[in-house]
Amino acid sequence: MPPCPTRFDMRQDWGQSLVEMCKWARAAAVINIVVKFCEPHYYYYPQMREVLTRAGIRELMIETHGDTSLGPLRLRCEALVESLLAAKGEL
Image (cartoon, helix red, strand yellow):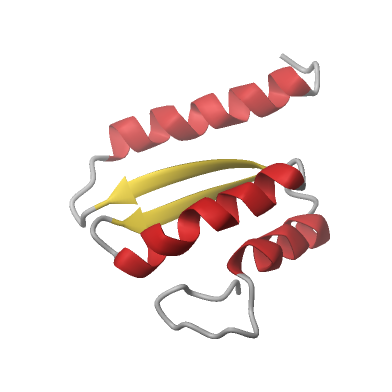
């Protein structure tokens, strides 16, 4: 489990933890679900995204506030999958 930015620990790096998990799982992308107005998530998010980008891992951030409709979320996740398949030449 990657460290949660709301439970700050200087010894852990959110981005690097995600990179290591992706390598272990052979994942090509990360979907981050961020609770709207959560300051710790928004504070660390740019650094985490940069680490993932440098590692060649795509990332999709979904902002939620509790009663998020599933239709738009599904569409965004499908677009991410399509972009991954297109990058591999499988689409």
